[in-house]
Amino acid sequence: MLGFMLNQKEVQEIENMLKREMEELLLDLSDPRIDEVVKRAMEEKYQVIYGISKRIVSPKDRIKYMLHKKSRNSQ
Image (tube, rainbow, N blue to C red; front, top):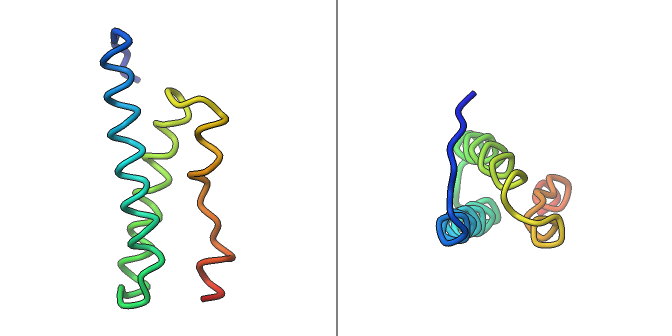
């Protein structure tokens, strides 16, 4: 367990970084050219990043970043 204090500007910057990373991963996960083994690793990374974001990002903003496995697998 690691704890640290951040000011509001730092929290906002971390929130923006997490959102950008999740957006990139969601875009890559929808790319049919990427191998399924790589996508599984990307999904694991996404879950870690999403877990971090749950501690910082508001629930309202977080919901649009939920990973929907069924919709991706059906493509």
